[in-house]
Length: 191
Image 1 (cartoon, rainbow, N blue to C red):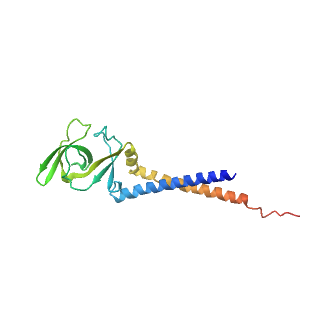
Image 2 (tube, helix red, strand yellow):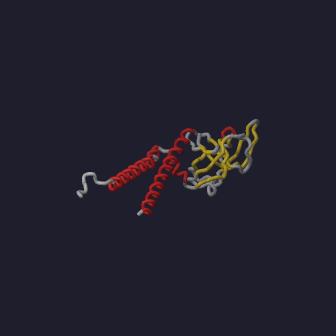
Image 3 (tube, rainbow, N blue to C red):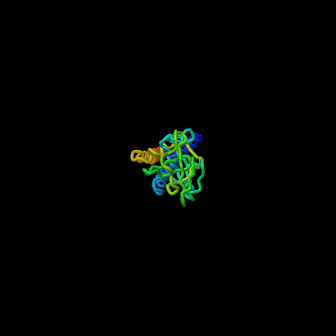
């Protein structure tokens, strides 16, 4: 009986810890992404979601990638992979195929590994946002992209609700056990 109680207590503690950690993780992702202007950031690296297949097979559609922002954006050379802002203010991650000095600036001819030809317009060094680090996690980007949408924001409430429900059930069970073990006050032994 004592072993069973210890096992149940251990399971309760483990589930509570897991739900609390999940709640903290989700809240942290939201806070970090809002504080950094919508892009999650950790240890000086930004996490970006890949929404196209232009860099496949190395970077799959729906992946997340880590990029390192900052530094001298004229330092890149052929075969480096950079993230830049296009003329339409869209972030793109492509490989440099040609470096073209242009006064104090540098222009980069870029190409997606999966594309037939280079991009139409060269990228000015001031439009480079970050350098790709080589770190990618497939398919997580789909979930991250959804969580950052309006519908996905509601999904973030689920860990909190689960934790509250689980806490309520745990308290209710504990109170039921206390009531079972308490001596009945209305009965007396007539001796």
